[in-house]
Length: 155
Image 1 (cartoon, rainbow, N blue to C red):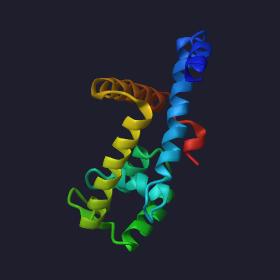
Image 2 (tube, rainbow, N blue to C red; image 1 turned 180 degrees about the vertical axis):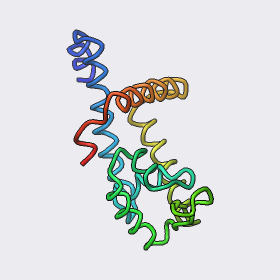
Image 3 (cartoon, rainbow, N blue to C red; image 1 turned 90 degrees about the horizontal axis):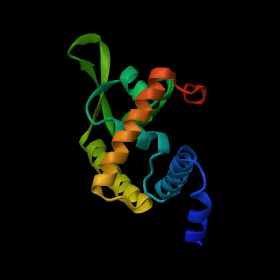
């Protein structure tokens, strides 16, 4: 059956094939991420993954393609559960940084490792192909951010 689908899709333009591949990967990963055993919400998991270093909430909102109010609510929940703390920004005493605790770092490491495994399994790409896909995906993301974030991501 897979070969049959491949033959039907091969007549489509490369652009359509690329979009269909990204769409299929997205849905496969969403399904796979739902199987990760954690008490965290999807938004909380995304925030932990994006907190690779201490960040201001405005920077984190931009990284997550969302609005600051969403970041505040998610940060409050993660702080209450002991995954992060707010610390004064040494460069601007009026601002706060979100910083992972040991518990947050441990959860982040598990999420990053699991996401990597799920991506490799779903995509079937080797290390070199994954690096090339990441390079192209970053180029696409940068272009989208440069030309305007889709309205659905700003609500």
